[in-house]
Length: 184
Figure 1 (cartoon, rainbow, N blue to C red):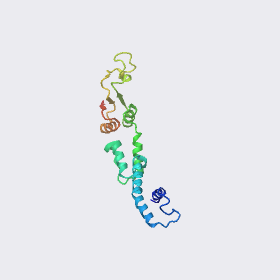
Figure 2: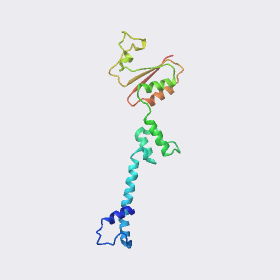
Figure 3: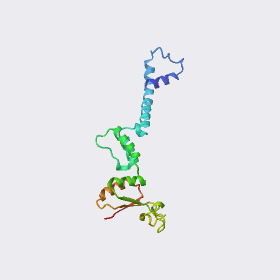
Figure 4: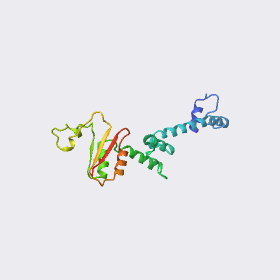
């Protein structure tokens, strides 16, 4: 507050008031402090708002709002979790691989030993039906119109269907259809 009061005092006409060095102006100092106080509060509020605009410097409910903005209801704050820990968990969630073939393969490999992904719009998965295929899995019909479709085939009958479905649901993006076929 003294900084803003000093700035106001610096622009006052020098001939009207005693110099700053005299410090014999209690009424003027009170009036300037009264003028400086709301501007000090406003500057503090702007500083606080600027800090809340970035995840790394935000605090309190603003961290929760950022998590909701980025991830919806899928990443709530754990009871008793500090702001720093929650921010670290949010930042870690940003770099999780999702909606890529590698991410699906990683999820499948973690849950079963024999799983394959077939994407009808991906040429290496379909090849040319009935011609020059290097293995039997590539002899399938492809489709240029089903770009949001993934088939996951699992040969292992002991695979946990619900765990596989949950893992793939967390990995896929909205609008992508994932079909799971478990062969016995």
